[in-house]
Length: 233
Image 1 (cartoon, rainbow, N blue to C red):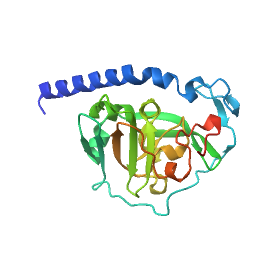
Image 2: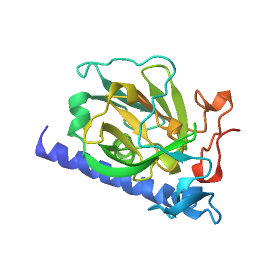
Image 3: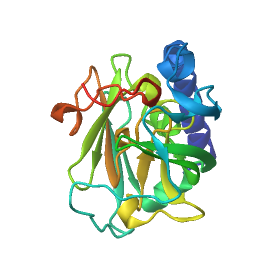
Image 4: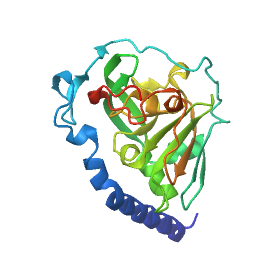
């Protein structure tokens, strides 16, 4: 790619990132994890000002494994991530493409709806917001539906998905993300219950409206806020 083409692409991404921030920053600042006046939980405040341990949760040092009954094995040479739907630029990323994107290290807590929480997990991956900037969601886009290699789906409003701690991770605890925890790549949503982040992620679909995912149509909460004990609809 010529230098001018790279500069043009970078400029488009920067403009898209700024547009997304203008559209969704106010909404992000009004989400429950940012403004809840009476969050339920215990312990010192986390970095978002919420109690470290949400109501009904138990801290664990272990990392329990939950899935739909299968753990797909995806060779890195075969892995790809499609980003499409209500966006200006469809993406189809190979493993090499994914690793060429800006990589971030972050540490966050992991809250499972089955009542356990794991603190201070070290992650490495790509911010969802950076992928969104590359794809440039249309003005009509309000939500995303995440698809996984095992057929799992889950939905998110863009104001939650665009938060800076929402990552597509390929490393955890200073090693490659294990297959049973969603490797090669899974999505994490530290400010929501963990089912809102798909293991073995294969596609991110921008939507002009909401579309409930696998657990949401089976009675789980559509919003999934841990500090409101927001587990079921």
